[in-house]
Length: 56
Image 1 (cartoon, rainbow, N blue to C red):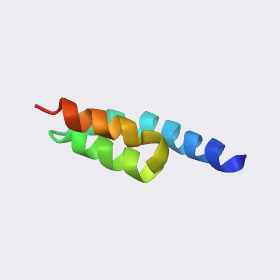
Image 2 (image 1 turned 60 degrees about the vertical axis):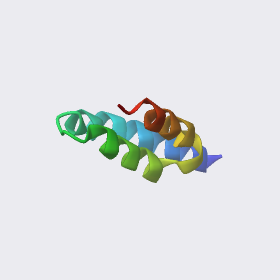
Image 3 (image 1 turned 135 degrees about the vertical axis):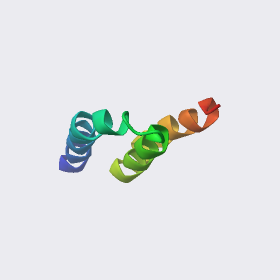
Image 4 (image 1 turned 60 degrees about the horizontal axis):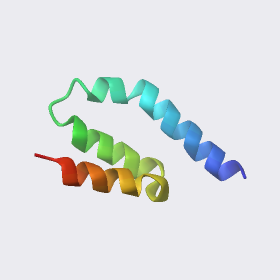
């Protein structure tokens, strides 16, 4: 029960602290994908795939 809650908290924490800074970078999509992969592989794998498809 605690593991999903912990990973959700970590992703929330990263989205508040790190994602605003990564948006200032040129390669923000790569940074965001890296964070999502490290946060919760199973939960975010679909998001990563969508980002890869939507890249120009």
